[in-house]
Image 1 (tube, one colour):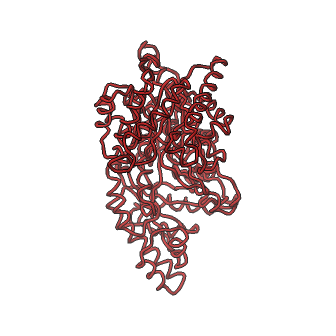
Image 2 (cartoon, rainbow, N blue to C red; image 1 turned 90 degrees about the vertical axis):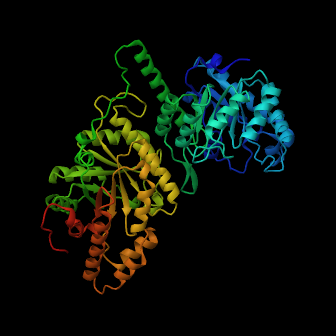
Image 3 (cartoon, rainbow, N blue to C red; image 1 turned 60 degrees about the vertical axis):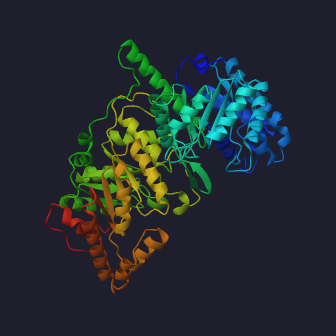
Length: 625
């Protein structure tokens, strides 16, 4: 039997990404049997295979993940197991042969075998012998059609993985077999088995390689792989989903960026994985980025082996945090940070914003945080206002930067330009979808989300562009992110925040805090991946303002605050009560966090100044408007 080491020479090998994700993006409804497309629309499947090969994949999985009798029967296709699997191998082989004809490289066809989609005994009514027979039927068809290897993937339980592997050994004894389980958020198999237990048993049962795929994303897969490494000497594989899907404009979108998956590939290989690739949500763009990362690692390894000069695309250490910006220095020195946020004007006259920044600078505020088209509104660019504020007032700025309107190329260009003209702090945001704004028919880009953006900025800070190429002098951004302690789906918010920290975030600014209990809970739950927290503070100006934030913007607003605002009888009294509430909240959060950001609602900068006065060095604050 050919062993994996014989085929791949004990080096990092890149598999392809998701088939279903690409098909869904091309308009194939999710209620279709995707495996059957091997017969009814072979040109579409062939095109996807060829895109993955062009992106750099060396292992091409057949479009047969669900092509077992049990799953196919649900679509009335139980009698076409052999035909669909054979067609799947034929299409993948055709794509590989096209690659060879172009002398563009070599790749291998892996027969994809997914779970049966039913519970096995003793938890379900499907017997183990029935399961093995179903696997054997599919694997026999894949082997007969000429697959180079088998990938048994997304196994939820070890008993099902055992039956699939046994079927492979009985039916196709000469084919190498890679077996991958899927894991939960704690990096355990869905039947409760630990990664170490899975690794030990799959090794004992005769797999040629083992690993983890699918799951909730790169972080959990990486944790599982690290645990497996200590329990087996077999080659390991890591092929995660591109994070958890998020609803964007009515579609479920996986928002882990290509850059983030490239970073994962480097980490997985460093942790001992030989095979890397992607599962749900990954596309040829993700695989292309992962290929670049692997090539960069190969180049660096060759340099270290030969002892020659550093490779031109090797990462360089970023400038120390305390040297990058005033914010960075304050973080490094563990000093309390004060920010005030400013919204750019809807036109070209920004004198009110500049005068407000000048006032706040004189009072001792550390930096001005400039919004990037909040709530998808069309305004002066945040970058332009940041530069004008810095040039005319001398105060440092924090640039809000969203992914909504820009593709990867323009993001990189913007960031390089921002660094070259003196912007030192960036707040990485996904951005509100266009339908929330004043031009709801505008289209969104979302090439990456905030997690991917953090990865891009970190890479530029290390002297590398998106493709892993050296850019000369590195950027020196201090990297911030946002978080919402009152998010309706707090579990997803915490999960994404952890990803942001792992990607390279250095501080976080929260949404406005009115409910202290939510902030306290949030701080407790991020303790294991804590970075400096800057709490958002918003001085309310009226009861209507409070109602808008509570009902339209879904900000958690205690009834006590609503009652206090309702009891004011004049606009001036409402503003004073709003300032008092904000001051109380600032004093309450101050011992818990590393800084505060006070908003200037509707350009009322003196309100922000009055709220933040207690933590400013300047003793005088101008009278309230």
